[in-house]
Image (cartoon, rainbow, N blue to C red):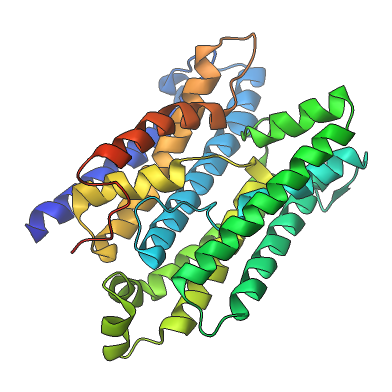
Length: 336
C-alpha cells in the first residue's frame, strides 16, 4: 500500500510538472513549443511569452502551491477537512487593506511593488495579529479558540469592506469588486519575487514540522505524550502559513477553494501521512491553479479575461457540496 501511494505521489508531481511546462503555451493564441525552441516567434511574441506568460505561470504556481499547503496545515491543525487558508481572516484583512487603498484614492508603489499590494499585506498582517491577540486571551493556543477568533475577525473585516464599497464611487467600487475576484492580471517577475520569500519560508517551516503535524492530527494528548509542544508548534504553523497566505493574497487577491480542494483530493489519493501529502499538495495546487488561469485566458478569446477566482469558485462550489454529503467529507475529523 505504501509503495502504491508513493507511486501516486510521483505521478502527481510528474503530471503537475508537465502541466506547468505546457501552461505558458496556452492562451488566446496557442504557441507551438517548437517555435519557442527554434526561434520561430516574432519579437513581440517572444516578449509576450517570456515577459507575460512565463511570470504569470510562475506566480500562479507559487500561489497554488502556497494556498494548497496552507489548506493542508489548517485542516490538520483544526482536524477538519473543511478548513481553508482563509479561515483565520487573513483574506478579509488583505481585502480590507486593498479596499481602503482604493477608497482613499492612493496611487504609489514602493520598490516596484504596487501600493495596493502593500496595503493588502498590511491588512493581512493586522488580521493575523488580531487573531493571535484574541487567542492569547484564553489559556493555551487551542485550535477551537483560534478558529473562533479567525471567524470573528473575518466577519468584522467583511463588514468594513462593504462599508468601504458604500463610500466609494462607481469606479472605486468596481476596482474593489474586481480585486476581490482574485486573479493575476498584468504581472511580471517583480510580483513573482515578491511572493517567493513568503512561500519558500512557509514551505521550509512546514517541512521541518511535518512529524509534529502528523501527531497533531491524532489529538493533543497523543502528540504531547510523544514529546510535541502543541502550543509552540501551533504558533509556528499559524504564523508561517498565515504570512504565506497574506503574501499571496496581497499580490493575487483572494482566490478561493484551492486550499480546500487540493489537500483533500491529494489526501484521497495518497493518504493522510503528511510526508507524502505535502509534495502531492504542493504539486497539485500549483498545477491546478495554473491550468484554471490558462482556461480563464483562453475561453473568452480577446474580448475579456475571466478572473481566475471566478473559475476556482465555480469548481469549488460543487466540490464543497460533494464534500458535505460524501462519506469522506461532511466535516469529519481527520482519519488515520
